[in-house]
Image (cartoon, rainbow, N blue to C red; front, side, top):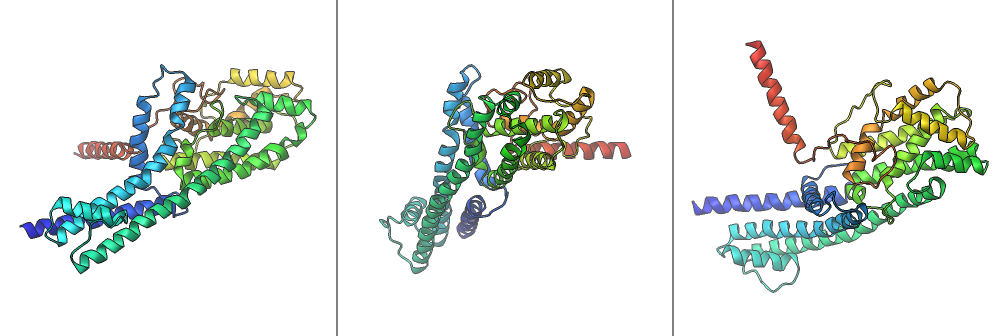
Length: 379
């Protein structure tokens, strides 16, 4: 009986080590949006802890200051979690293959993983395992050391254009301000080259970095009133207004940037298991009203921006673009607690976001309910 228990514990310990290493490789090494369950659990639990301290009664600046620590602390604690689980897994293996007690096995595992060497194994096969554990411990630390520069490099690239947008569109950014400033300096026809081409490249970079390294989604801008998701929404709305309402020659670069933008937001939303309609119809409702759209056109008109005569068609064209990113934009803004911004965080009750840990349970429950309903209908 004791032997069987030791075998089971040893197998579970080896499984824990393997799963931890797989999670680390998926998080740090694999260059694609693979979901590492352990990493996700870690960040979701930490997020719930932080949300205890960011109650709505606090001012936004206070909440922003607290949430600015969330992603960095999560990244620092992540290798510590990996190392702790490796130590626990190897401790179970050591306990399974020799007669020492659990406390001695844990001390041996901790000594090996941290390469302190204060506990020496007495058997050759245990010594070999301790060497393996020491190599894994060093590997986890090395992975994280190489991971952090990559994270901060992608963060710096993202924030460069977000900061430049403040010069062009104000703070918080506004499509009306952006158009007005370009009209004032006589560069309205050059907005495609100055803004849309560069932001198409920005969206491609953000899609790759924020799905393969999802902690970047929660890295906040250096200034509390700036946010990458608000900047993305402003640029998309500006492009949609330019394509639908501004009376200038059609430019295919606008359409390309819009498509790159909403695909990027959707793929980031897919990583977090957010629910949205992937194939919306152009006439589906959006969170922007036609009255708000008309007020925006009045602002553009007062700034000297030439507008198309058919305002009804302009509204339909704008809504046809906005429907592609309307839901995911608000969901992501809610997830990262974005600062106040028109047409993004001021939409009243926002779509409900189900945390990724509970979503599979909800989907399975719905599937079982549908199966029961089908069986009862057949009977």
